[in-house]
Length: 233
Ligand code: ADP
Ligand code: MG
Image (cartoon, rainbow, N blue to C red; front, side, top):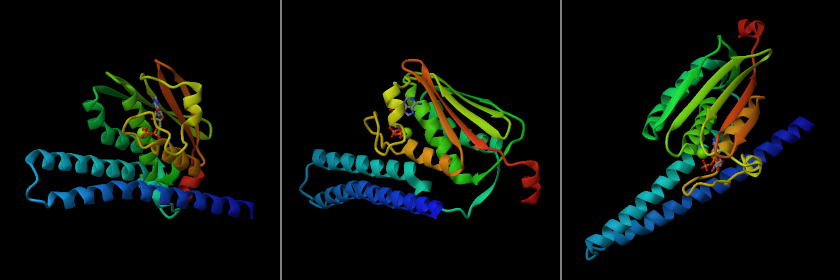
């Protein structure tokens, strides 16, 4: 019963967050709708028109970012659990974030491990790692290196994502993962919340080491699936 209650509690949190996200997305849509209505006025000056269009695009972009940070979290399901080879999935994550890293002048390194299998949902694993990697890239204001390292340990696989960016204070680390906590002008404060809840759902753990001005390491450890379990699948 206790575990059922916990599940219910989790669902309640998810639906509360879902409600507040839909509110966050509805705002920019309402604002954009208003601007489009104003644009129907043919006597508007070119300058005004451009101004309304610019604001509309900014609002839509905001809605897009909110949805992309939240996307997979909004659909909790246990149906898609499969056996995942962690190096292969990381390779995919690297492919997805490389254009963003290149744009920000960030170099990416990848230290692989031997084949290591975990059980989880592919898309969610991707999303949680992408959110953490994106933060790492955004923490490096000029240029830098984002290092992914995988280590196969006794019973778990350890994935670390290290940046040499601005780092965080103790207080900032404590606030990580709480909804809407962001220090960025256009941040959503949803990325880490989504990442943490996905990793927890995979029975994983997260350790954060950070030093202001020097950089941050997110260390994620996830239980390995044993050979016997692999054969059973
Ligand atoms: P957002 O990226 O939209 O601000 P997140 O939930 O992804 O929201 O991150 C919350 C906050 O945590 C960020 O605004 C930033 O202050 C801090 N943070 C997360 N990762 C890092 C990192 N690698 N280095 C420095 N600060 C970070
Ligand atoms: Mg983020």
